[in-house]
Length: 248
Image (cartoon, rainbow, N blue to C red; front, side, top):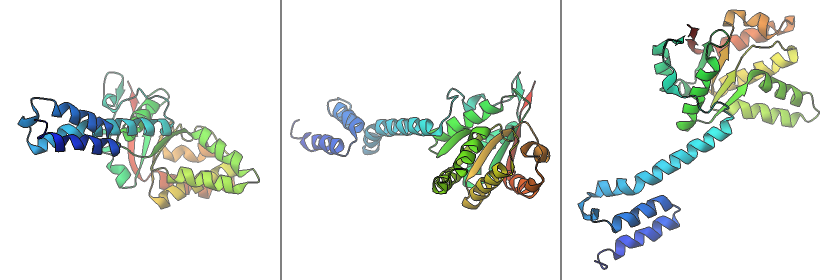
């Protein structure tokens, strides 16, 4: 028996050296199991690899979730179905949950009145995106613009440009409460630059808003110099899907 298992036992060392400690542990368990000889080569390979794979994916999910800045980590996609409290356009939601819109470089607008569940909806999508290993971030609209505005007004413009580039390159950016506050021309210029750059790079944005795109003009800014930029923001950001949440 010891001679037969000598070579297989060497695999434990190899797996440990490769940093595959979970697979190494499972391999040791299998070597001492009476079921060892009953496995086909494919079954044996799966028995060794699957536990390591599951742990790796779980750790990656936890890292993605931490980096995403998501607050409501309890929100789950399974709850995004029409029920006694809320009505969704369910066909669109099911399609979005394939995350094909990210591969197609499209955006998603989520609309509804106050307390309709827009933030929960987007939190659930962010949670699921982290699970599927998309690089994503969840930000509040005002926090995002305020941060970039402060950086743009400092003398160190390199830091501002780096931060703008950072947000532009996030594969899937979640913006909550879009258009909730009015901004000066400087703020709208930053927003325009961010949305335009994200469009050019092909990164996707999911956002929530109480207001329809036709109303954005008076909610984003009341300065005349912003009109052209507002149109450019609306045209680019609404390229994609629309989700309406109706509070029952």
